[in-house]
Image (tube, rainbow, N blue to C red; front, top):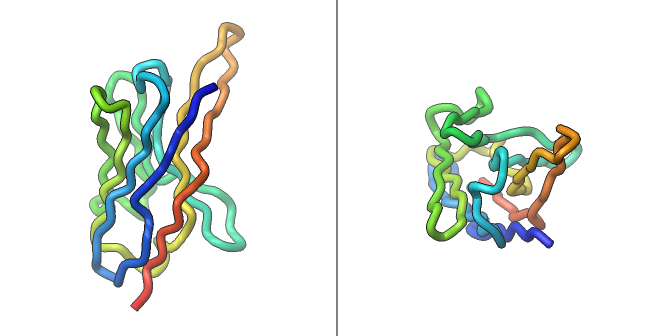
Length: 120
């Protein structure tokens, strides 16, 4: 059973920074893609940042230039460095990893989520 365990959420003032961590129970190289999603109250879950096998990254337009996704392969950990946080970044952040199955479908693994609250 694959586990993704997030940590690092909390309360921060606007303009502040947080770093989220996602520790995987197996090598991150075994995932096709790994990244972070978020869900604010009353809204759909949305992609924040994602790293694709091969090293390419995708970011939501709303976080470009402020958030950075990175990995520590030795620790099987994915990070999300969040700078210049805004009120609208408040959400539950979820770590996601997906794998390609033999029939070419994608299977998603999710962490339990970590709350990020930006408030003055």
